[in-house]
Image (cartoon, rainbow, N blue to C red; front, side, top):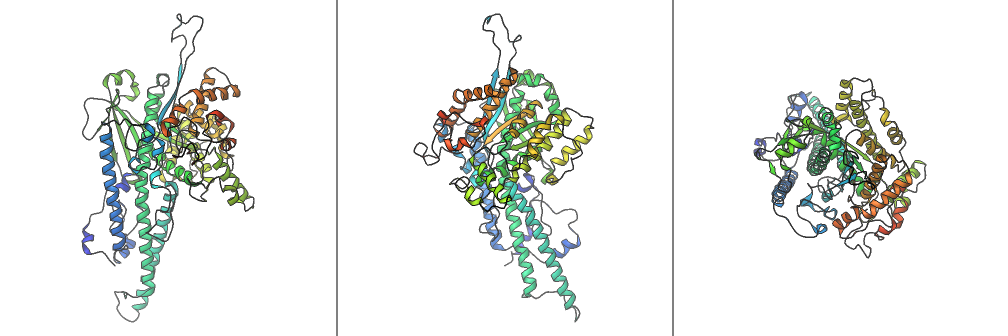
Length: 630
């Protein structure tokens, strides 16, 4: 059944959600324009004209269903915006781990709450200040004689669309299946676009062949409605249009949620770095203005089950941060449409301005700062409307029993042993994960992508006889949407500072190599970047990694390379620092959500003290409320 002619009068969206989140239109000759972009300049090509004569390629049933879906999404976004703004001025005094409404802290136990999908969760700035004190002459020393240093990392839960899940997005639309996080869904979207192109070509050819044969006996301008072959070819185009259109919308909504979380995390890291007087005094702000602020995400998720979907979501949301430039401005009154910040003595408002279309989308984020603080603490290179572009990276290494199971199963399959199901069973497939979805190759791919981007940045910051224009060209290629799988930056040699990291990455297939995160985090710090550590909940594996980083930082300051001493310091921080209270803040219990079996499979650097373990898997006697999340 075809739509009525009134649908012809509907104007195509020119800046809808699809374009707003950086997606290009992939459909050609589909009317009305089902993606959010207007027709391209070559819209009057012969192919377009041929398709234009064949009517619509979607059913009224599908469009009714889809319009209802869009209306529901629109209402959800509007309600979310209203409640987020309302929450800024209405504090709620309830235990933190029970919060399910928008507040300045979102606990990890709220992952499945759809209303909060745009807010990053369990976000903290893990700070460590190291100072040397003279115990013999405490009153005779000054901070100038014994200067201290500061360590700042953001810790959080995975920036993913947890509430929407990672199941089949084509349910009730198609017999095909498209599931997973954004990285997988967008790869499937490209495949659907190719299928649509092929189906259109077959239809055009079929119509042409029919008319050519029919006109041998006389003039013919129409095809019988019941012509079986043409009808079959035309319905195939219908199916392809439905699939492409639906998955495009689902990716757009998912991108909006994940990008919102990732942006909040990146800006938090940037502001934390600006507050570090030692870092600013070392001249990094000028380099940030020239080359961008590196924000290095360090993920500890396993490439199996739902955590694989979280990795796929996070990788896209983090890559989208490259579209963002941040400007700090002295507060001279709240601009129109800006959002007031009532809870900070220094930050007054934020405002965001989108520009461009599709993959050429850009965002300018303005942050209003208290004028006195702006003049005193914002470094001169970042004043006077200086825009700093974000330079996002994602390194990802699974460090728990699930990742061990995924690697073991994959290695057995590569060796010709059909034992993957027995190996992954019980390690990957539990009540918190979808069944049988394992992809260990994605970790190697993501880490290699991040390595190449970090390599470009290192060459820009510390030149090695390579022209800056060439480095910047390589950066542009790596961050372009079509860069996946290309090697167009291969002419840039591995920067000397990245030699060890490069070695770890290229040898990481089939192995849990925590040295990748360790080395990447150290280099990011040396390059003036900010660090963001996350796992699924941001409280257990994250705690182990960030405390190890803090112990390493303190050891470097003391010029102490004793690994055992570093591990002892890390254990002390895990027991007596802030991480156990963060666990309690999230789930109501000051315990790390591991048991002794899980600990056996973790790298030595990340093993928690045994007296801090919860000791039960999800559903155990202590944590009936779902406290075990790792």
